[in-house]
Image 1 (cartoon, rainbow, N blue to C red):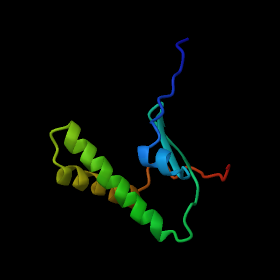
Image 2: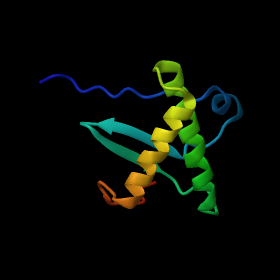
Image 3: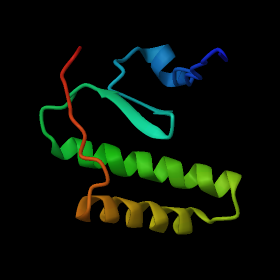
Image 4: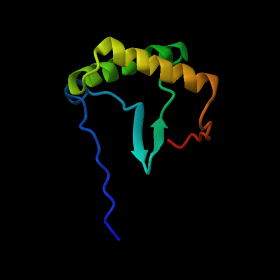
Length: 98
């Protein structure tokens, strides 16, 4: 059996320099998304702001690494969000572990 390997991202340089607390970790394993997170904010509204910030970063990466523009990538991301909100593909379950 082949050895399984996990490829973790590096800690962002500003977090290494200034300290902080990890609030979100997302991985793809066997084609499925696996997530660990902490509530982190007093107001759930802030999660909306964070999710849009993540979408913008993802759109920029697509623009750098594919033929899509940042705007086109963002449109696709927003379409995926709306599709998932309208018809969740896997509502899954959530447990507070930390």
